[in-house]
Length: 475
Image: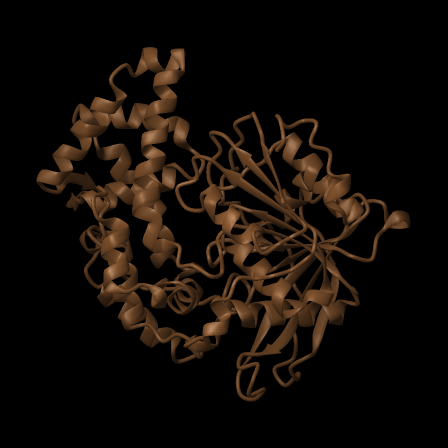
């Protein structure tokens, strides 16, 4: 395995994209599993040609009986059809719970290099987006105030569970089921093999795909790598603290930032000290609500995903007493939990089974002791998972994925969620791998240098053709 360190700071673009007016076909109610329909579709601003479709799968893939799910997808067709290759690029979802079909238009504008000779396949996996979204878009029983102090208010989660259980078997929504759906769709569309590009949770999807359908995969890109074999969320408190310390150090080393924020380390300490004493009351939407330390930590974590440059000013303001901007961002950041069309159902069904169930009391204590976030985030997940129906997975699911498929791994050094050491853990079992680390990069990295390497891998199917001359020294 080669390790390359990129010398430019690159940050992930905003995750949210505006929905575009793509029209999708539908299947008759009595159509069987395995039926599909695809037709040309268009929307303002779409680059090139596209096809929109649905494909019906069994909700319970093992029993192959009962409910079905119609999987929505978009094929962004190769821009040069005469040179079209037979292996498309499949973008794999983050989250868990990211929907891709609403972003078809901006994706069509941003992936032109990959699309020159290849289709790009966008899939809303089961339980997400247009594919029978498992959202918790119901009122919070405790109102706005209950959204503070815990990411998942249990009365809201229980109400959501009871609502969704009437139309879905929540245990059937797993990464393995989603992967099998995508591979079945691949075969139905007539693609012999695919190239996988996953970010964050999508890197887990890619790893499971590599293990379950190795003959279907030609090349893989993993951006913000999370291992299948380890629980990730239990470590987020320590990663947050380490990353925030990195922001402080980076500001001190940057003359312009240091001039604007000469006491950033002291400001962080003052801000945290205030919240350690007691929650800070703020007024939001005409209501006084308690902004807790755990809420502050979740807001800081979100900003570190790719907006770390905003933190020094926000921290300086909070240290001086103005915490409202951070509280407002917290409400915005947590909107996915209870919004219509949101991702909470799939998110919990997947993470409870594949991450949270691995966390013991001892591990939670050891992983969070001494951090300002403490165990608040992992406690909220564990409490929600205790009442959320989810699959019980075999121990083999958590084995490291071993594969010789050419794999490019990408990491940001300031990633508070999927740090470079996670990619190193995964890469140890991938003998045909290249790992790129971006100093100062957040959760997911991008840029022209990254794009050129990704395109080179997918065009050639070999890491030997990846040109690292735009990158610093290699070792």
